[in-house]
Length: 367
Image 1 (cartoon, helix red, strand yellow):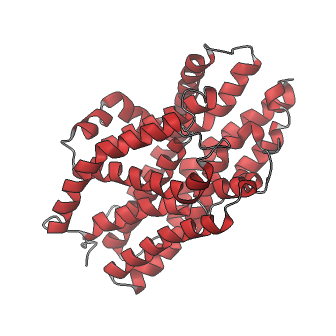
Image 2: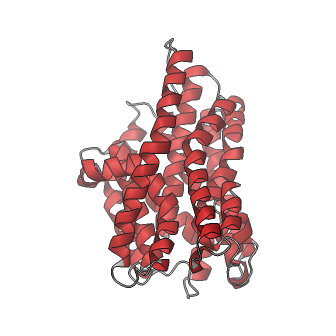
Image 3: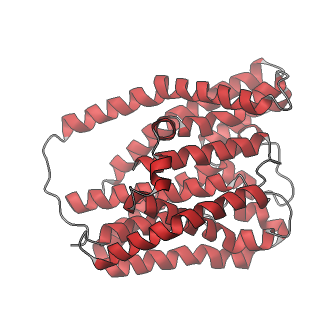
């Protein structure tokens, strides 16, 4: 799905612009919401495909692959940040070694969730890794839960259970809502789980429907109709809604808003999968954004925050900070991809090919 990689590029650029010039896109953090739903869709699709092919989900293999894909690059970024904190008198990197420890342990979101007032400085230099913590904590439980559902429930019941799980975080956020609980809601893995689960539900629906199923044709038609309005609404959220600031939008966004963003993203993802001929799919499938999204989006998200803080401490401020930050982030992300991520991915692909060379008959996900 090339368009999905292009969507990743749009989302990560939106987050970077928000962190540098929040006045341009006060709701630019919606890019993280988009990432959550994409992640739930992609990971669940892989898990369901594995289950359909082999009748099981290799949990150890899943966690190993995920660790190799994410953690080495994260640890390198944490190490570099810690060195900058200790070796140089950079104001925005003071105490960054502690933030690096928290980020390496994927618990920055838990630290931030415990702050009732303003965020503490404990995780500030690497505060953007809160979203990685949410994902890692979610995926500790989701593959096992999905395996239990696939083994013990009929296909339609699986969809019903996952749809019900999507609603539970909304109810929980409504119960928790209070201006003092905003950080708890924004950073909690339990209060953000619906965004990942919506992507997972979409993956399960698409796996359930056969190519000749009339419901798939109906879904394809509505995905095409809703894709453009969904993209426009996501753009309006980024442009007009100050998600992380105190505003009149807070009670709505921190209760049902997260689910709304996930549903809008799911509409776009469904169209990218089912309508390859539509112009949004063709636009997001252009080679440059696809290559960046596929290979550099993770590194860009990892490195943009410390890179921007470093440039600021070195005197790059005002209007030049955004283009300089984007350029430096791309360079650093490419270095991470070439020196850390790609070598490990190649090694893992060789290992899988060497140990599992025999083709396995494919069973229909609907069976």
